Amino acid sequence: MAADTSDRTGLSGGHVTWMSIAAGVSVANVYYLQPMLRPLAASFGVSDALAGLLPMITMVGYAAGLLLVVPVLERTGLHRLMRWLDSGRLIALALAASATGYPVFAAASVLLGATSVLAQILMPAAAWLAPREAVGRTTARITAGLFGGIVGARVIAGALDGVLGWRSVYALSALMTLVVHLALRRLPEPPVSNGLGYRALLASLLPLLRSEAGLQRAALTAAAGFAAFNVFWTAVTLYVTGPAHGWSTTSAGLLGLVGVVGTATVLAISRFLDRGMQRGLAVGAACVLALGLLIAGLWGLSAGALIGGALLLDSGARVSNVANQTHALRQRPEARARLNTLYMTAYFAAGSVGSAAGALLFADVGWTFTALVAATLAALGAALAART
Image (cartoon, helix red, strand yellow):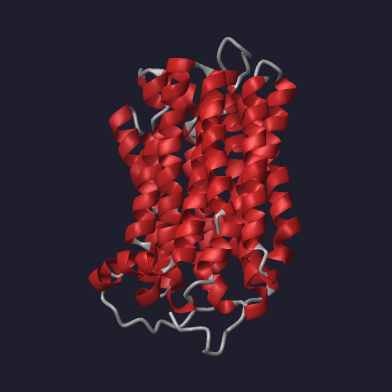
């Protein structure tokens, strides 16, 4: 993609709104699973622990899409890449909705994760098209849409599973994918100026990572927090639907509504992202995330403590990501797609490990110790951010 010295096409408010919606619709596919783990386990006749690996499997697919697909933006162009991703996602959704066994559903989950990286293509495209003084605010709006998709995924999945069954979730997602595909057809197309071939683009990733210390710090800080975030959200679903609380799947999905506060927090702090405050925000956010996990872990038998801890956790995780991602995308403007690939690959790889660890830790050692492990990860992220 062209460097920042080129003229920018610009984005209208309507463009950014639809990009935000599209980011949420796409990323929701990674999170629909979390409140449906027990129904999926019953449907496929597998253990809760095996069903608990499905979020990790989906995130592994997402990380693969980040690594292998997002860099193509710099040579293929936005609209062509969007068509490829939307087509692949519709195929994956059809496979997931019709799966009758765990292996097919797991395979569909990998493909669904890999083709749900639309937000991570829209983010660097928007950073190129937006006025230079509004890059932080624009990416924050799209990130807020992404977070809204994560919140909505848990609520929609929990509600629809309770009424129509889990397959209806994937049918609805396919319909929403078609709607946003049509809405994004009028987006400006960032110019393609990178002459590197596909293999050369991928080969340039590691040297780019080695050369950008700011990217390294941002990615590690956010990855630690996102691993902690996913330990919590995988384990808490199994915890609250088990004997300790006895919540229904619908109630477990509604717990995800705490993310509304996190999304609002991102919008509230977005004006500070263009004032050189990204690193300070990252430190504070990681500390809030760790505090939320401590509260939820130590007083987990109280529904109020779980909800309060989840509110802090979600807000901290949201601000941590947008602050670190904005910092990462500013390092090399002419390589934003690859910067985003490196940042988000580390982010979601850590998230996939966190999802698996949440299920396995909860099965072996219970809720309190699992939450404390997550709090330790979040504290590590705060320490990394503070060293900058």
